Length: 110
Image 1 (cartoon, helix red, strand yellow):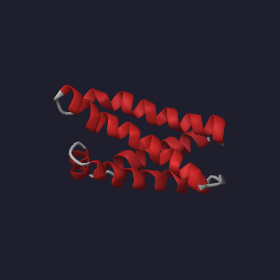
Image 2: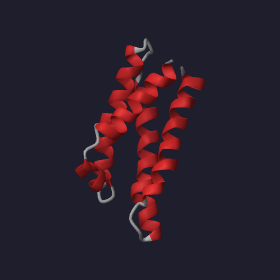
Image 3: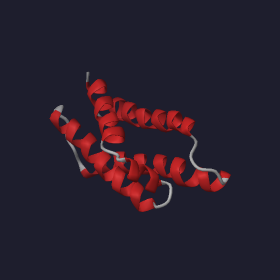
Image 4: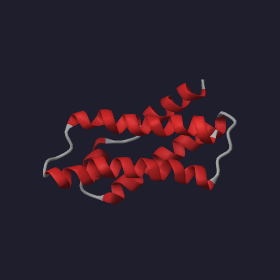
């Protein structure tokens, strides 16, 4: 059940709490990715807390750094490397890596 709640929190924070202007800015400014990651990580940590988990600075860093690396790769590095904007299909590996981070947390950390 914890997996379902964390995936729901993930989608809420990664989709609903991310306005279009921020999505567009993420491909131009690393700071925009940082802004998104702070909101995302806060939502995930609040969910973990409400589910009875312990939220530590290390846990916050785990989710923040992992999410930042994934988004920076797909929004900044790949477009720079290929010379093309982020194609839509990149949403699938992007989301798969975010899911993997949640599963690793539930498996190893929780």
